[in-house]
Length: 384
Picture 1: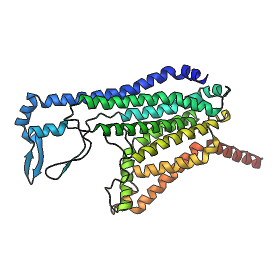
Picture 2: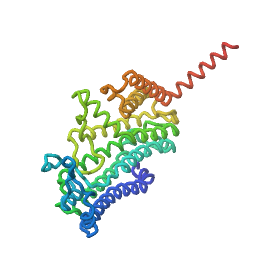
Picture 3: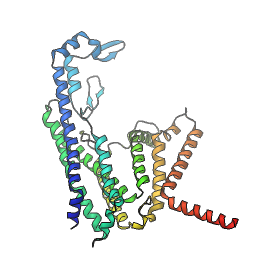
Picture 4: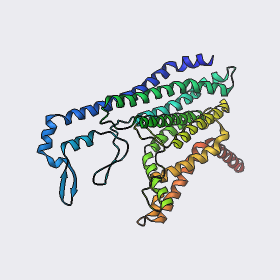
């Protein structure tokens, strides 16, 4: 019965969403190999050979003192067409660093998955579809589990098909003498990409179940996207901070190879994949527990379950604060003499206060209203 209900409500939209996922992966894989072949055609053309001979200063490899060292045409062609995923030692003792020649669609896929997971549960709460589901002779956990399987199984399958198609298109359509990423590494990075995508979808599902207010729930998702726009700054600065903290100097990649956002042939640590997969299951299990405790009386509140206000408030305030101070390079400033430590500490404290206040206003609006009305009532009585 539940399957039929879910099929009627989500079937066509779910099929269309899965098709979009496959097309993004396959389309960008096709675009990558097409770009490579276009580049190869240009390098084989007389136009390029003529330009290479007439403008040698455009093709300088290095300098020995003030004397330029020029590429040979074969060296330049190989350097710009070879696709590899590990540093390659050069004759002068230096290294050439990985070149994947891959168009990444992570900036499309990850937001799509987060929004999909969020709206799949949030819309049902706002359109009173949950009220209909709760009237059926099924337990809430059963309703959630069947819905999660119905939605996540086809999306997972579409991701697998899309990732494999992206890998196979690039691997099969670019000559092997140029495409030097081992197939095993491609598949390993594909597994990492799939698990990372699953985690993002699980985060969306959890937020879709937890958040209940139409305006502030959607605003929270917008703020999350805004914060994620600075994720690589956060990640780089956190790396630098941990490097200074544990090694006494910057540059050490303490948190290296933790995830893939695209099947680019850079496999992540196996334990990081397992941790990410475990996180996905924990988030889905947490979403199920929240769903099981949803009361229709709290419809419209920021949180669908008031009992979770304190842990959500603390996680939101402290997590956002830590993210922002790292994104803005504040912790690293303690290790540089040209920054004022007093000013840095003051900035960190200001960020903490702002995050605490904003999080409190979002999570405890009812408590604030009750306090305000009670204060008004007491003032009115005392004045009379």
